[in-house]
Image (cartoon, rainbow, N blue to C red):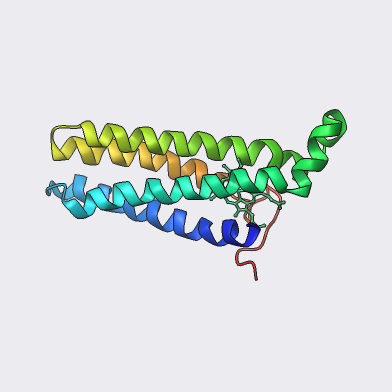
Length: 150
Ligand code: HEM
């Protein structure tokens, strides 16, 4: 599960970045919101939900999370345990909720310009939240995990 979760981060980030870039382009050029744009809107959400589901599975089996909860007041001071048991999980759940609300709001818009505008805003925020909550080996704010797990 850890291997799958680790690799799927790239797919989540790729699809979200693609969706945001297409929406920015659509907004700038004033073109129509095509079925391809709509596909990006939907696939990004589906893959993010799949990653969230694996994350919940990981949460219920991870030795880090198991070590965290029984002795909360001591382990909350241990960065890696706190990050995965609280910060990472909570931020990712919030990000997927933001993404889902963005997808629903985009669908409800009448004009294409509004669809692109809403998508840039909501998908953009979801991307920022997800990117900043990944345990990158180059970010000092989180524990370091490999970019590519073998
Ligand atoms: C949806 C976006 C998410 C992304 C992009 C993401 C990404 C990652 C990455 C890159 C790692 C490190 C993997 C490695 O060590 O190679 C990780 C670990 C972990 N994630 Fe997520 N995650 C997401 C959501 C979640 C959610 C929603 C939960 C729980 C509710 C969760 C729980 C965990 C746990 C517990 C670990 C550490 C497991 C361990 O080492 O024992 N993740 N995640």
